[in-house]
Image 1 (tube, rainbow, N blue to C red):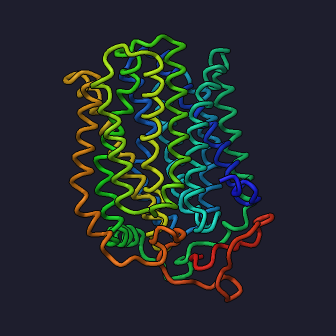
Image 2: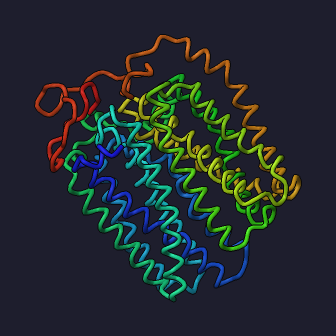
Image 3: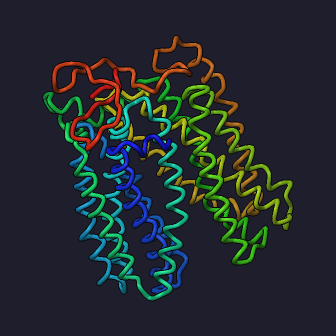
Length: 448
């Protein structure tokens, strides 16, 4: 992964994402605090969290056709700059929960566009040979930012500087836009941009059909339903497990959160090694999901107040397995999606993952009420294990199909689509250092 940061183009892309995500992470905790201060109502706090998630779930699939028609740089820079006035408008609205919720939804809509364009652009930024490392590096960075951002935001809020947090977030969007604007590799539009444009709704419909026509992607989307449902339950109840079952004090709880994030980083680092060994195969996806399910069974044996060392190990284990399955997911999508439907495929993936996670989050409370906190985690783990076993026959059928060159375990993750000549009329070449990024040079065989 470190070699990617030596590439000037990827380094600027990575810095843009880090800066933008750090501002978002600081703002998330700040807005929850503001909502709690205004109303002291759990319902309102839940509405704030839901408003932060909902736009990606509702709009993800609808952003896809735009990502397949417009240059990624336009969407990335546009979504960054549009969010600047939205976030700044939150400052005078800090005393009105209604206005804040509306602005949170608007900011989330901009993030939905940014996320779809960001993922769609990865093969152009790194070349398809480096997709596993790029995905793992992003996951590692994201977990680190999610650990540091709320901590920094909490410090600023404690100092009475809520407007400062929002101003810094707006500034991060400007910095991100400037960095992304310097990436010449993103100037070219998608492969279908020069073709006769389909009507939007036709493009959306045909794109979804095209994505679901790929057997491995049908398998992926079907298995993601139980995985993300269980992930939502875990997200809801892991904090209750730490605070009410394990009865951790403030310092112990903070350490446990850090260990969960550390485990997630370990899972992201392990992912590329598994991809290199086994390929982004359906069986690997089932194995990673099954390991997450098996880890969720462990509260049944831990008891109410295990030793702190046991709790620390449990947090590392849960963080690692909760993160690990995301590496084969991202690689299967970016490998098997034809470029002309990549934006719609990524948008559909985001919509499925976010919406099903929201359902899991909503189900987590009632499940804990009926089964107990630990019982809800054990039950969700059992559901995921049963689902993994049930999908084994489908995985075997897919594995028995003849593999294309891009799907062999020792082959790079290259989209299985024909070569398209570059601007000079010759096929694109293997990427080395891209220098200032003004001359795109994706991997041989990569679709431009």
